[in-house]
Picture 1 (cartoon, rainbow, N blue to C red):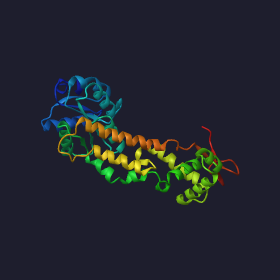
Picture 2: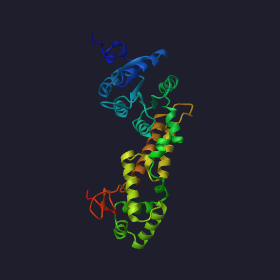
Picture 3: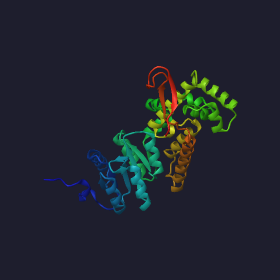
Picture 4: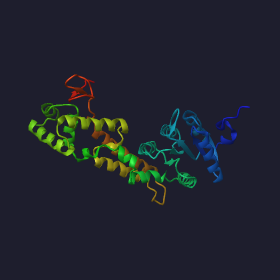
Length: 316
């Protein structure tokens, strides 16, 4: 005998206030059902599909929607935006297995009221759910801890700190070195005298602790390409620490629990705009610094990875 899908079961499809669950794992939904039921909260509906959730939630009018941040046919942030477009009075919170700031940022910019962690215990999850139902923002304390005291994993993923010792102009010269450009080419590109470029190059070599331009080019390209692949342009990898600090400050403001009364819609929108502006400034700082691909060629026999090396620019 085939069992009925929970989302089609009348028990979990009651109209009116309640909590709607979106998660593609039945065991997670079952755990939330038991947690909320034991606390006297009703289930308005549930689904394992983002598409189904977007169609059903506006009609069910739940008081709160708990959205898995990553389901096979979409994301919690996408569902949150879709719901906000047609029913802005329905509150959504995301739920994630990570405490990565990328998920936190997505939840805030999508207009969510909070972001829960699957790593939290039942009492903490219930506390946050009750906060969201009462109109307060509800973010797992794990996010705050990660922002105030970054984990070892995040420290390891940061852009090499030697780059942070460079001035903005020195960093621009370093990027051009990573592209294999000569002093003359750099001077033309940056509209600087060649002597100025030479002095800046000397400063870059000294601060990076390398002996020559080739080593500097290899160093710069390795670091930037590593950051590009690993971070996807994430703010934590910005070589501009002041901008990164502003993003962190904006995030901490958004997840703050100290206020006694719920934030107004205007306050939440203002905090989200501050975060968006800080992210835009950080990304703008990265514009133009991504290096062209390079190839290490052996000057003796043309084989990569052997003997004496030289940097060659590769046409896009």
